[in-house]
Image 1 (cartoon, one colour):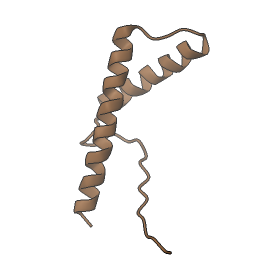
Image 2 (image 1 turned 45 degrees about the vertical axis):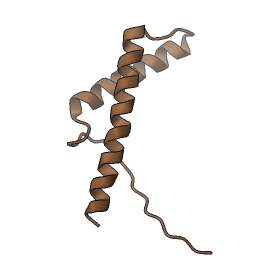
Image 3 (image 1 turned 45 degrees about the horizontal axis):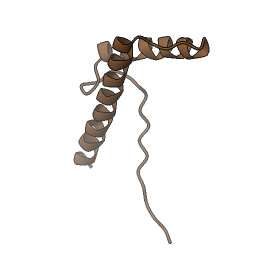
Length: 73
């Protein structure tokens, strides 16, 4: 059985779906989260909530990006 698929590689550059400000903040919070984790600590509740929100926004941006690409095919 053969199947076809499309693979899209995102280079994590800012775009209209997830702008530079959000991307930079996500990277900053991910670095803080990793450092905290490595030291047996955690982020503050506000930072965790912001990180969760940015991850959700990036996931939504990924879906919108994929939809825009599919519409262009």
